[in-house]
Amino acid sequence: MLTFTVRGLERDGLLTRTVYPTTPPRVDYALTPLGSTLWQAIEPFADWAREHVGVSSCSMNLPKGSLLRSSSRWRPCSSSGVIAQTEGGIVQGLSWALKESVSFDDRSITSLNWSRYPIMTYPEVPPIDVILIDRPELPSLGAGEGSVGAASAALANAFAHATGKRIRDLPFSPERVKASLS
Image (cartoon, rainbow, N blue to C red; front, top):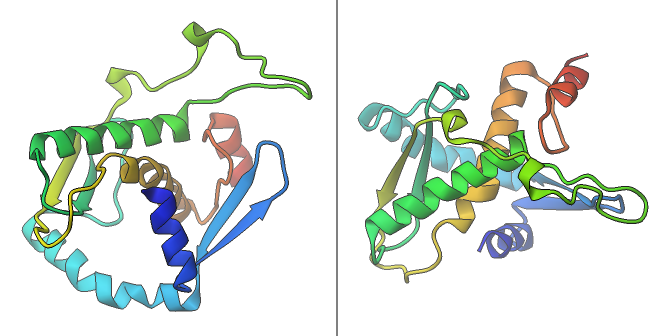
């Protein structure tokens, strides 16, 4: 679902995608000038959310703060299932961004012990509020997949907004954060 959405945004001229021939592969996405104009259409919704739902568009504290993900998709068959899938996707995305890393050398993967593979633990997960917006005119589709990449991107954008610096490689380890700030 995420790939389909991103490719559609690229096809429609709202997003550019640059693939770098590196190991592991690196792909950068950026809004085009046309894509940047979407903020004019989205800003009234953000204002409404801030007024009625208490959403703050520029605040994210991890791990003690809260993270809000608004899922505007379709009429869900099971709203509790969609919420659980979205929460799971957010946790997975944050775990990718903050912890997960497979090590490898020139020939093969060297991290072969899953018991030592770093993942986000329950005490590290921030409170998450998911708001569903009923869209009965749209068909039922997958729910959790779209939140995985968005969580990592939101964290990266929050860091960039707070510091003026970008981190482009996952995970956002202390070493990478320090290096980006120097």
